Figure 1 (tube, rainbow, N blue to C red):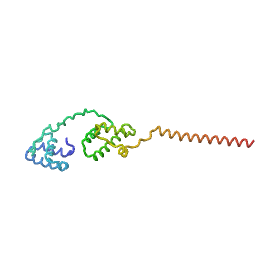
Figure 2: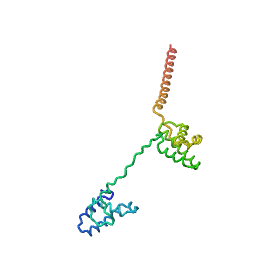
Figure 3: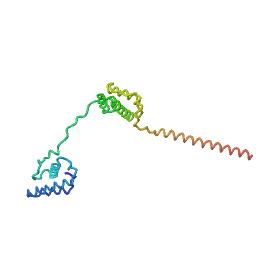
Length: 216
């Protein structure tokens, strides 16, 4: 049931359950706990290290082991605990290509009073918005659009200078050439080759005509 301890520890637990002498069973249970602690040293950093080991011992015995444990004996309910249900957010995202985090960031930025820090954070947000817009539309976004969206999403409480926006480094990659462009360039090279071949053929024909007229 707990594969991290291995088959041999599970066999030890099965042996514990076959011992009829209670004192001997308690003594052997302590020995098994020590072995489990050596096999799982990561638990030593936890505050309730021993408590977890005893819980694991009872889990491996399917809660049937009868020993005098130093902690309350657990039940099957600890294996049936489910996390609380999380409500799915129903809020509408104004601009999906930016995401909800940009809205939260601009909302929090409105409360910052330090203008220098506010300008730096706004520049970082604008850079991220520009990268996400390129990711969504596969084309370079217009700075005027970024500036307008920042003002709109922040209720005109956050602004960024166009000069500062132009100076921001682009973090997105240049788009690759498509296959059509490659075919077009290869077509031009083929045309050049075919044209050269035609010119060579014409020159050869002229040489043969001149030679035949000279022989006559």
